[in-house]
Image: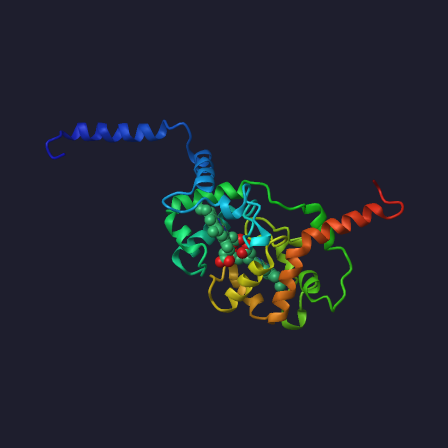
Length: 241
Ligand code: HEC
Ligand code: HEC
């Protein structure tokens, strides 16, 4: 390069810049396309995400794989970063997250954020209006909380029926019970970053093991319970068809 005149170097640089800007896609559209490709084919040796998280990011509750579709892009990217740097301990995801570079993590996060959540939000939200008995620990925690130990209702932050709220409060409904319980225990043990305002470590450290299991089972089973409630409402005499 030393023998090239300065103007030639400038010109080569401009050409390289021009080629980038003239690409068929740029910005968010490019990121979505890359993200889709990573999800279906993997990248840099990371396996295709669809194998575990489903063709549309709907997850696989029976196998314990969480849904990703419709969650906040920043939330998903942060989780991938945390699993890559080890601050969120995940034996299953660590190598995959590490294989992707930061731009690829952002692209695949944006792709999943753009897919519709696999949740019937109206039916799920309706479950929050259903009466709950205090001895139904999971439902009580989700809808009422445990004010004697400063635990607000989970639904207050995660939305009625755990449908998720905005970019910061992920959906819980339909996530595998073992996954939900695993995350709560990870916060208790310092194996997941505190997240916004340290809200979840504060919640998780105040729950007993029995409460963690009950509330996890509650959210895991909520989509089915919501369908059942809707069917009963339709079957009731005088119900709107
Ligand atoms: C072998 C199965 C498998 C593959 C392949 C896989 N995942 Fe995962 N993923 C999991 C499991 C299991 C978890 C739950 C993590 C845990 O329990 O530590 C998870 C968790 C996640 C989370 C955290 C979700 C949340 O709600 O916080 C994100 C984000 C994620 N995976 C993205 C991806 C992406 C992107 C790919 C593809 C590049 C991918 N995963 C490939 C199994 C997999
Ligand atoms: C004061 C608000 C608040 C309350 C109350 C709350 N959460 Fe959360 N929760 C959050 C925030 C914020 C996050 C995202 C954390 C992050 O970004 O790391 C979160 C994340 C989670 C996650 C991780 C989801 C995933 O996809 O990995 C689980 C599981 C969870 N909460 C369960 C619960 C349960 C169960 C309760 C009730 C006992 C509850 N939360 C109450 C704010 C709250």
